[in-house]
Image 1 (spheres, rainbow, N blue to C red):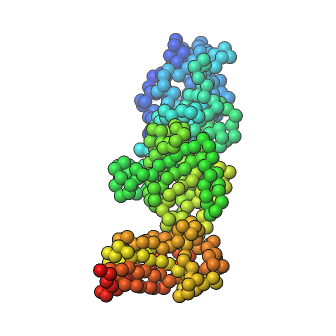
Image 2 (image 1 turned 180 degrees about the horizontal axis):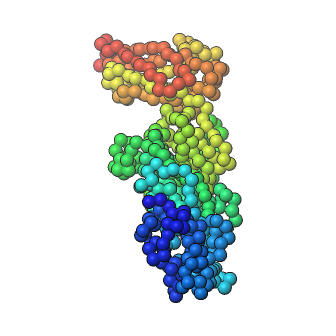
Image 3 (image 1 turned 30 degrees about the vertical axis):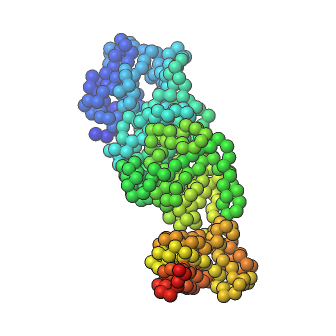
Length: 454
């Protein structure tokens, strides 16, 4: 059945029960009325016709005062009979008023846009800013229902309303009604607002995968909320943040999956030392993908930063700071140096990466310059004891590295050198660090057959 908008589809004693003694109007799922409901305008029109033609009703005070097509008052002691009746009303808000005193008020919430699965996707809402116990809409799918926000002498929720749509594997949506529509307070009328979802191509893990660390160490990814500014270094400049995600070295895709999972948890998700008690289901969204790039959001706490991210993601993550400004790293090239068995098996094997040519000294001279990683610190030269490792991963500040007077933001010609003692002979190879990710280099040392130091 469809929503009833024609009063001719309503019948007294079937869909509508009018109790002139108790002064109540009951709506029931029967006859033509299903949970698709009836518009308040159609109900008002039906009631008006009943008063016109029912001789038993005309002596009784009339129940309604219409304000607009989407705003009505129940007056003279009249009310809907029960919550079922209230939940069947569509397309209008109402107040129950008697002798100038309003006892309760409802606004109508109508969402615009489609839900990916109207039979199962279900929105929920809160009516106080610090509320953690969410209230689900009466039905799954797109919303059109009355929501009580005022009960005389009990509560008045006219100053806050926020609705959320968060389903596993789908893009999230939310809407802060008063903020988005620049309202000072709610009243008993219809409010239409955008709310929709769709499949999220960036989610492949199930909740069970995340809870059991299947596919990645999801449990190591955490989010911390701070009451004081956390200044974070991005490209050599400190920027202010109040939310910090620890990526634990995992890729941005795993980080996004874990954070989206946390935002559906009916629990405190704050792992930080300030114990700010941040409830997952109702806190602000932290991340969003735009193409292949991951952006952090400005939240009610402040900007969001991701630390300990995977080095290959450095130039695909953008951070929104406390000032709402998007910050990003200079381009950082990444690469991996692979070692053959002779180098891995030699406990003394060591490698170095030099610039092949450099204004301050070329490779092959005593002034040769060792390439530094993206931290731009002499303590982090790209040179190390191999110590049995099959590979060494490095980062390179492509946009800013000016070691020895070289020109930044240009490809760097390099020479890799390695030498061991017992099993690895001296080896060198040349290559280029380009403005790219996941570049591969190999050092293949011949087997040492002649070294001896008894």
